[in-house]
Image 1 (cartoon, rainbow, N blue to C red):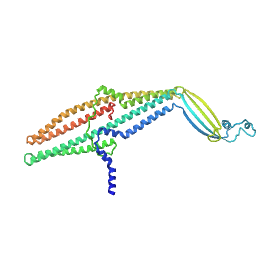
Image 2 (cartoon, rainbow, N blue to C red):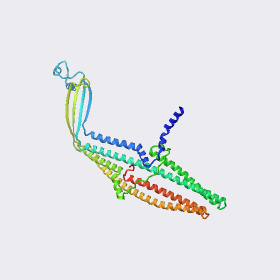
Image 3 (cartoon, one colour):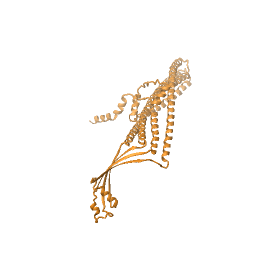
Image 4 (cartoon, one colour):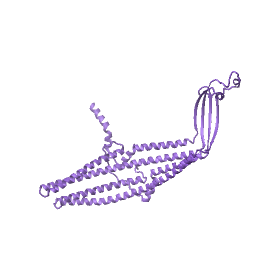
Length: 445
């Protein structure tokens, strides 16, 4: 029974890792996992929710505000006692004319005042309209920021996935090169024992094997770091082992240079966010201008007065209109408006510069993709030639025609060609994702 319980406990504690190990991680799955619970996205979602709440709050200022208050007064002030007694509707001319009652020295009077008051702004000089428009623009900007954060997190995860895949291919290349070099070293030792080669050939082979072992050790370290980086973006423990699937070519973007720039200027979420914030900033000019315009509001209230809490022995109501015009505030309102105008002008220049930066970023991404495609094509041709060159050199070496230095040179050249092809291939993959990212296309779809 205890053994069965232990096995059950072991299964329950290890099933998450077994589940992760069932299927290799695709690049699309890595991006989806990264955006699922990433702290940056959670923070952006909270900011977007806050901005939407503020927009709804701004709308609320256009509606009447209703307040209920309860006030207690205990006083023997002649004027107040007289007025409050009348408000309680307990005043009588008989008692007022009674010589025994001195109106200049009244008894203490307890009064409870229950008031319901409604206030409605009618004309604010455009202030409420400006604040409402600002809140809406900022809410829209927060939504764009959230969208951009999702794409940024997904792009970082995709880049980390590709980097780990690249490093593992590099490790495998180094392992194969090391195995080939060790085979060449063993063959050189065999020929040396047969008196066919000089000791220098074996020594050169040993040095080459030692160099490749160092490269292999570095590749192993790079793999561990790349794996930790991908786990970091996925929100997993950094030491967790990850099995990757074969990468698939992303759908190539066929946008021309001008089309790509136009799409980025129209669809980049961060650029749209900057424009929305600029619109909100321009509304500040309208908000500050309202200080120079008339403002009009209406207040309605209903009061209950009694000498008991929440009593209603006396009641009354009133409706009041209020108009206000600012004549002079020491120049503070004028300078506030000037500040808003200059801030809006600065915002326009910032957005203009941002747009120019986006255009440059798109052109750089297009150039990087084109360069990576050309490098990959050239590297593929060169790699085929390098493999054939090594095969020929190995055959000549086996026949005793070529020297160890020729063989090592061919193997070194092949390793460099393999690295060049590997780098160009992954540069092309990364450039496709980068081009989508900088032009505002979703890489999550």
